Every structure is written in structure tokens, then in C-alpha cells.
Image (cartoon, rainbow, N blue to C red; front, side, top):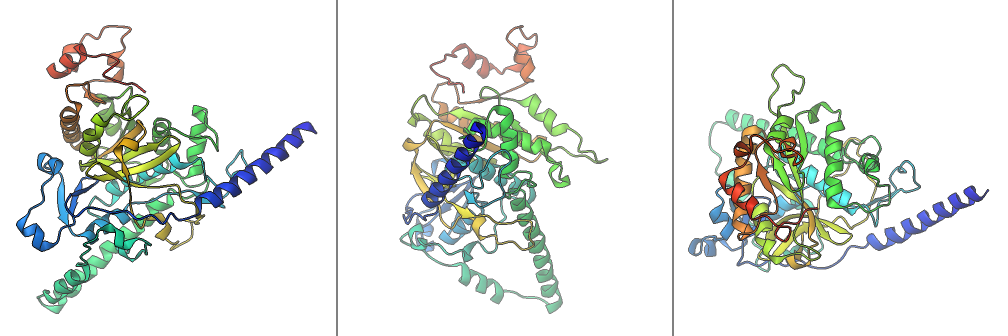
Length: 456
């Protein structure tokens, strides 16, 4: 009888907390986000500038990271930035979804934000894998936003004019134009199917391979339960397990590697990429590399701002999850010293993604938010996507350049080293140490101290 009474109290407490969180997180915050016309905006490796055409002709775009990094793609136009940002997949709190096994919870309001931002990080990696960085959602600009004027005080809407100009400029036999349009529609149709499939993998049901229900099941093995708050490092390992356990044929060509003690062991990454997919013509697997790091001790060290900017400027970056204590955000870009992010702390109704043509609007954020880097919590996880082994080799070089440029003679936040993790078992001395470390890495290791390098 006593046990039954305790269960009833727990259920009542769960219902009360759910009702409170639903009320708390179902309000749309009517704050405006302002962007400067005079500073470039970086979004996951792409650079945008909001100056008008006339201004750009006389004053070309200049930015530290785009100049130093050849991979940054420079674009103009406010609408292009909006289309790009809104096309990123947005995962937020949900309510009234199927009950989580082992609990009475039907919402993740108030506790699931890090899982949601982890989902966004993985979703961006899958978008790169299946659709590419140039892909944008055709309906992105149709989403209504309450603060559309706040993108910039000098919004120039040239999308319609550009589209009309392209139609007027079309030349050639009608048969060729008809074939071109047909192919364009076919490509758009295939992309839309893939777009919906990616979102369906994150649906709030027990069957969705990257849905909240599955992630919580994997979290139980690390001592976490539904209703607990998850840190960004724990979520990185949960995502790795979820991708490894996924049985969908489309997902057999991608894997996740989580760095150990802020070190990416290159041989281990390549081993994961070389695992056969089971087909006769198996190619290298794509890999998403997740690196849990700390940007300081109890507070974020502002010296690491250039590191964050550099990482978000790379075409390989799929974002950063972190934020404030007990509040996780998905960071995708920056302007000046402010980070651009998507906020999962907004409670939306459950969407059944198993239904054909389910609505997509609630999975795309209508407007970005900005936060000063100084307010960021030091604990975070950064992510990168590499399509194959050659891509990984190039990415490791580019990321290492950013780490060296932003470390300011300190030991970098994380490193890439040759060999396997087992080669660095310090209970025994590696026989091939000379081959494992470069000369620069040896010098840095000699200067190593716990004051310069913070392990998780």
C-alpha cells in the first residue's frame, strides 16, 4: 500500500511539473535580434554581408576569418542568410508525445534541452551527408516571423527580382527549357523526400532512431534517466551509440567518433571510416567528429573567443552545443563577439512524423538569437563532418590551423595526434613515440601543465 501511494505521488508530481513547464515554455519571447550592416555574419562556414550592392562595390567584404580560411564561402544579401539559417533543422521541447518508457513523462519541457541541441548537431551532419551544404529548403522564406524587420535595419529584398530576371534571361528552344525545368523539379522532389526522412529520424516516438525516446534509452547506460539534465559530453556519447545502433540502410555509410580527453586519435577515426558497409563496392564511411571541451574553468575564458569563431568559420563544422548552466543552445554562427544560436527552450505540440506530408514548419526556426560569448558556459561539445578519409585529412589540417592561431602559445583546447588511443597507454612506454608526435606536438607536450589545459 505504501509503495502504491508513493507511485501516485510521483505521478501527481510529474503531471504538476509537466503542466508548469508547458505553461513556462509555451510562450514565444517577443524579443528582436538585431544585426549590424557593417560586420560580416558567419554561419557554418558561409560568410554573409548585409550591405547593399552599391556599398559592396565600393567596400568589399573584409573579415579576419574569411581572409585566412580559403574554405569560407562569401555571400551577400539578407534573404540568402535568412534562407540558409531557416533551412537548418530546429528541434525543441515537445508536449503530448507518447509516454517515455519507465516514466509518466509525455514532455521534455525543462530538462531535455541538451538532448535537443545534440539532435540539432547530428541533424546538421546528416543534412551535409545527404543534401550538401549548398542545400536550402525551398519554403524557408515562407515561414512567418514576428520580428522579420529585425534582421537588419537595411533589409533589401532582391529574391523576387532575381527570380524574375532569371526567367526573362532564359533563352533557347522550348524543348531544352522544358527538360531543364523537369530535371530541376525531380532534384527538388528527391531533396524534399530526403529532407522529410531526416526529420522523421528525430521524431518523438519510440520507433525514431534518433528520437528522444531512443536517446533516453542509451542514456540509461550512463546513469541518466528521463527527467534528468544531460551535459554536452554525455550527449556526445549518446549520439555515437544511437548512430552505431541505427539499422536504417541509409545510415550505414556514416559513423560518429567522440574524442577522448580532448584528443582526436587519427588512426581510430580512419578505422571507423574503413569499416565495410556490407556492399561489394564499399566506400569510406563519412564521420561526424564530436569533441567535448571546456572553454575555461568555472567561467568562460574570453581568450577562447577566436577559437570559437575559427571553428564556426570552417566548412566542416556542424555546430557547437553548450550555452548557459542547465540551458543548452545550438550555436551555428557569429557576428563580431556575439554567437548566433537556435534555442530549444520553446514548447511545441507533438508532430506525428509517420504521417505522409507531415507539417515541416515547426522543425525550422523562423529567426535566430544572439548571445554574448562572455555569457557562454565553458562546457561544450564541438562537431565536424567529414565525407571520407581524404576529407578527414584535410579537415584535421584546417582545424589544427585554427587551434594554433587561437591558442596564443597555450596548449590548444584539443589536438589531433597520429596513432590509436591504445598507443598512448601511459602504463607502458610507446615504442613508436617518434612516429606518433610531430616536432611541434613534442614541444607543446613538454610545456604541458594542468593550468594550460583543462580536461573534462
